[in-house]
Length: 140
Image 1 (cartoon, one colour):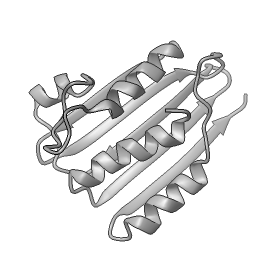
Image 2 (cartoon, helix red, strand yellow):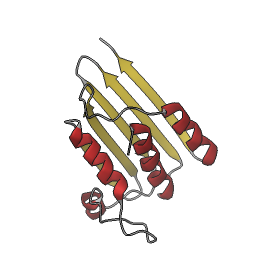
Image 3 (spheres, one colour):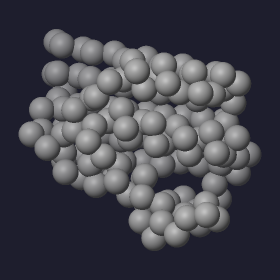
Image 4 (spheres, one colour):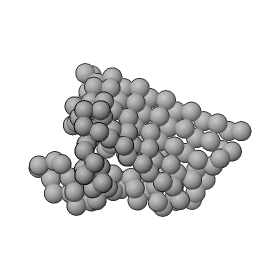
């Protein structure tokens, strides 16, 4: 994946496949702590503990038409390349939250990409889903 907007698109599409009706995307940049944090939360079907543990394995997917699930594996790789960390919490019937933390100034951190167009595309193609998007930048 070339930029964070493509990661967002991929994770949100997973949320929509999991029947989410409300999806929150929050991107927080903090110059002082040198962190960029991406959080995507949904109210979809959620996953049990076994699925959560395997979710970043590129050879695991819940999609019957595919043999690999590369989205979370690619996001994990992007996070690790930028000296970051990632958490995934989920429970059946309670939705899923993915939190990816990146060292903001790291030379290998992916660029943001076209966030506005990504959110606009998601809203246009999924009018029945409520999207909340917030990008906060703290420069001090």
